[in-house]
Length: 316
Image (tube, rainbow, N blue to C red; front, side):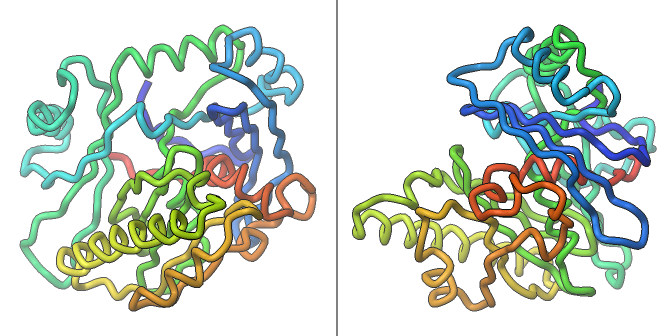
């Protein structure tokens, strides 16, 4: 199975996100000419890794067999790397990328499932080569995920990654002709993405889990805020140097739990750009699903909603 399948389905996508605390299931639609909508969002708590039999019960409850389904890899289950686009014929692209990755992965390239995403360059800079994102996961990880869904009798059509789920949401709110940075925190840490004209241009992980942002210690929270700010400044400065043709509009902070306070104000005071908190209801119709209308609900289902709103990728 490819990590990104190139197929559209007018009935929408059912995203099944396996988190450390449970399974999130979201179904969403992207009708042409109107606001995307969520019509199902359910959370099934779990104290450990979900089994095939547990997932099968969930699949029956949400009637997953009637949908085209996707799942998300966790942050530690893949690597996403920026590489220069090789000057080779289309049919040789994957082989050339695999060769370039052989010394960049933390496992043997022969054990990797690889997919690629184009990063468009400056349209006004003729002759300049484009970059690409290479996404690599161990064959064993991909096979285990496929087997789990097969055991659960859930038709798995797409294996996705959080960066693309976040890109899907970012693309709904980005101003025309300008780039937008988005930062979201969950139990695994922070994910920073920069998108422009619907394309992913930058991805960075920030090793600060959301629980750290809710610390009772003011000193600890301040230290984490400092660390996040420094990571953002470095990443965005690097982005400005690499993609000088993109003007950044703002940093959008993904939904946070109610017990996380102060981060937006701190970032707004220490960064050179506008910082906004995202209310998903401004970009996605959530009116039919009470579970995602609260701040807590938006945080819990954030990536699953993004995955369910997946757009068709350009075939590479």
